Length: 162
Image 1 (cartoon, rainbow, N blue to C red):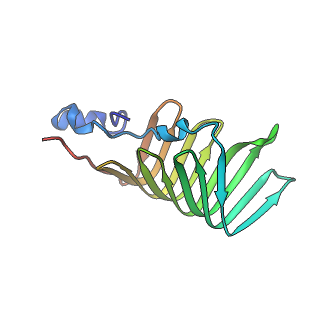
Image 2 (image 1 turned 180 degrees about the vertical axis):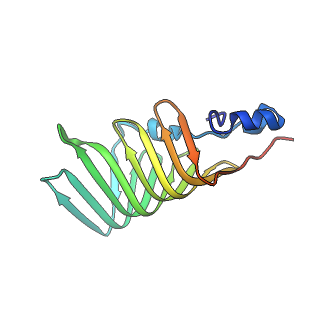
């Protein structure tokens, strides 16, 4: 998470050099760091459908794994068909907050493809990393490669070092 890379790298370099972008990125490296740790989920209600491999936590749902937290009114978990104990995909909706040790993000909805290592956030996305803030309509991140893309009405506030 050192450089904005593909999204802002060119514009930042043109504006004033590389120091503008230091400390800001779109990698969600905290998600990759918690892989394999136990998952704890709390909610007001739980629905399980063994025929589809889906579990829905609704009402004040909070999922925690290591130092990562996802909070939303509804969190749907889809388990891998070949391994009913392995989470394949996590869908959060109704206003989502995702927090890791290094960053926090908010959006209307989020989908985390656990096996693929991708996160897609949609609807008024706000990503905060320390003093830096990025916002836009859509955010797509590959947590394995550290590559990300923010699209639609993108706005960035990067704190510079004097």
